[in-house]
Length: 74
Picture 1 (cartoon, rainbow, N blue to C red):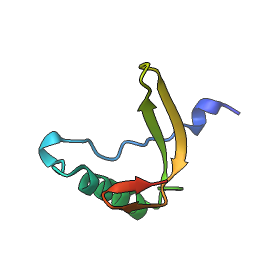
Picture 2: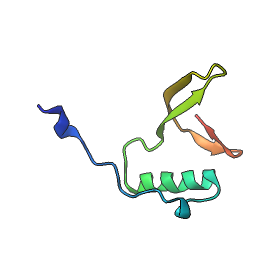
Picture 3: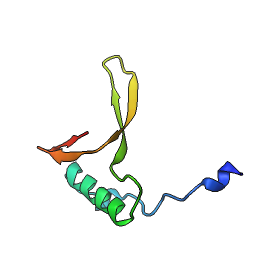
């Protein structure tokens, strides 16, 4: 098996600042709706990245459970 043959193209459309929503939550909803329509597996799986006070980054994979009060629930 050639592992490189498993590669899939994930680019469906570019991101244009001129077409982006001013509200980041509204932009996320557009992206999430696109993922649902595309029937992507686990569209609610995402990487959450933060930076600590020491400047060290940390990232983990989480499952989005919902959006409440203007924020994400994991």
